[in-house]
Image 1: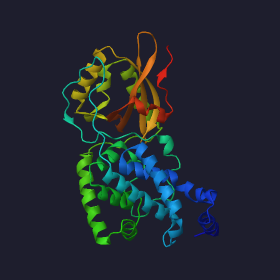
Image 2: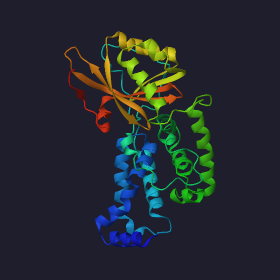
Image 3: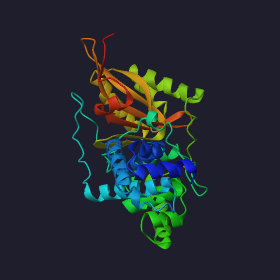
Image 4: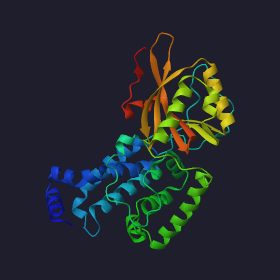
Length: 338
């Protein structure tokens, strides 16, 4: 521990709130991402980080400094997340609520309906220390909607172990200490979590990788999607989709798989006379758009947020969230008339 860190800890233990903030602020963003991965909810993650920092402030006298302050904070945050998952019931699914649109029969009913998007602006500065050498996932992949959704289907303790080991790269002995468990139980949980995660994520082996964020290739596919969606051109939209494209819309449980089914859903939507303007943003490291419904009077009201997952020059997933999330992305509830 550096002399400056030791001095800050000493001052914080003496009740210096500013010293405590200086100690913990560099870790706040990465703790928020960690809690989001575990809980699938931005709001719950923010609450848990606040709870974590309060517990750290109150328990700083018991911090023995055997592990780094960062490791100690992850211990607190992870256990607060586990407590939250044990005590809180999952949010119920919402009924279909799109006026004048009768949806086609869904391919299936989703089980992860409480998922929320994570603004890319909050990812900036979220990588505190580099992941350990045993990490298996890139940080960008580990915040994607597909990854976070798959995590929510696993037992919570397996999620904690997988994130601490395979995403953050902590050693098995460190994770065992964080969870008050044996190394053997950590290794066993990790093995089961890896199998469960890959099964839940589904077959992606034949897909091309997504283009780099902000690259010309990403810009081109995004521009084509915007043109197709804003002009209600279902044929143009279908040419952009992979054969196994997946569409979901939490907190509504309807899920559609395959470009024919997604095309039929889009046809129902556009045939009802609904036309949209899209405002770009980013969520979970992926292209995203605030969707604004044009009204006959000229006003444009926000109806939701679309997040795209890309594979090569195609769209392999489209997730629609309701309009309550728009302010998280700095997007207004409505746009002025054109």
